[in-house]
Image (cartoon, rainbow, N blue to C red; front, top):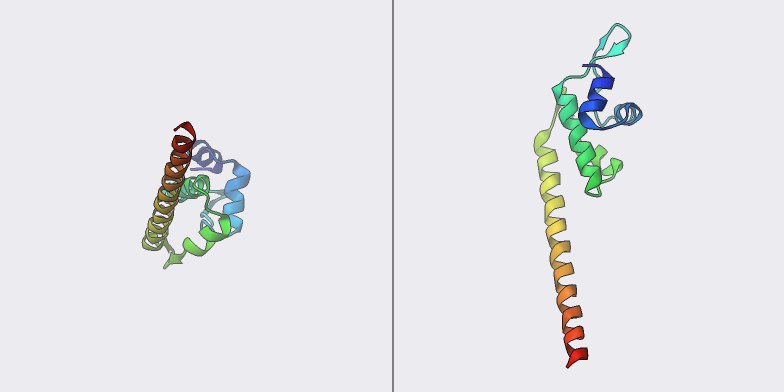
Length: 112
């Protein structure tokens, strides 16, 4: 599929897709004439990048995580990164829950 279709499917701009390609986050797709031709693997990876960014990941972090072995994405490395990211969010959630309990305690003390 051409870059316009990829942009529609992922919700990313054409400029962002080209940036991710330039930074090596996605492999350069083969060309058909003058046009790049993307496949489903590109779309999957672009969706992952988009989601990871919404969760607070930076492009430099993703650059270290998205690696290729024999021309294929190393999904195991990405999975490990996502598991670590999840654990970090769980810890942040617990920290926030603890802070909320302390605030509730303060409020309770004030009202009594």
